[in-house]
Length: 94
Image (cartoon, rainbow, N blue to C red; front, side, top):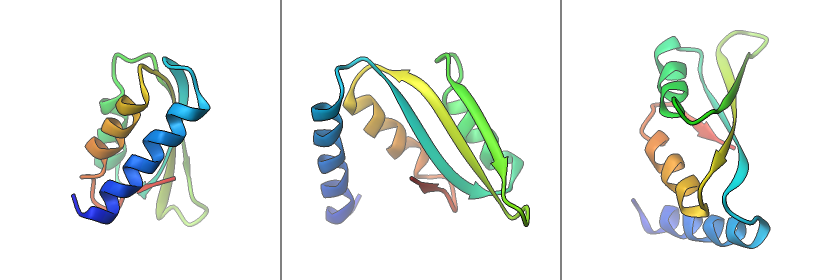
């Protein structure tokens, strides 16, 4: 991970720690190319966590937004999940 990305995650972790009492509900939002395999990778990563997952395809069908509402144990667990999913080609985390 490069220094800029590392600094981003450190800032995000601090903001998460300041804004919530953990464990807490967290809403992940992703945009991925409309590829069933990529969408399933996201969904499977939250398997057995009690997540509520909503997908919406763009008007052109080229992209799919994936919203995941799930109870996370800590700010660090949120960061870890973003890092885990960052390996999916074309994913954008919002």
